[in-house]
Image (cartoon, rainbow, N blue to C red; front, side, top):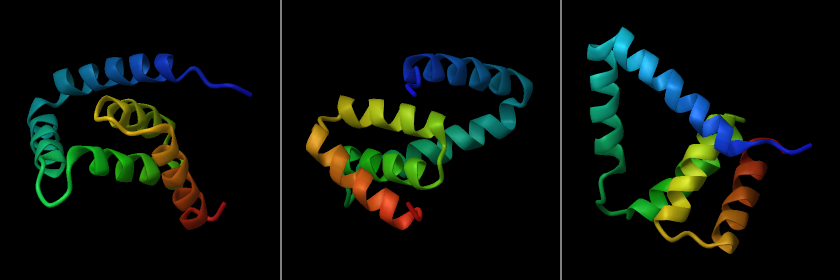
Length: 95
C-alpha cells in the first residue's frame, strides 16, 4: 500500500489555512511556539527535523511524517539518516 504524501501535505496546508482564518490568535501562538522550537540552538535545524520525523513515526501522525521528512530533506538529511531515525522511532513506538 502506498500513500501519496505530497497530497497529504497539500491537504494539511489547506486545513491549516482554515484554522488560521478561524482562530487567528490561537494559531499565532502556535506559529510562535513552533518557530521558537525550530530555531537553531544547541541542535541544528536538520537534527530537529529528524527528531520531529521520528516522533511523527512513533505517534503514527501521517501528516507529521510527510511535513517533517520534507523539511528534513530540505535541511540536508540523507536517506541513511532517515532510515536510522526510522529504526529508533519504530523501536520506541512499539513496532
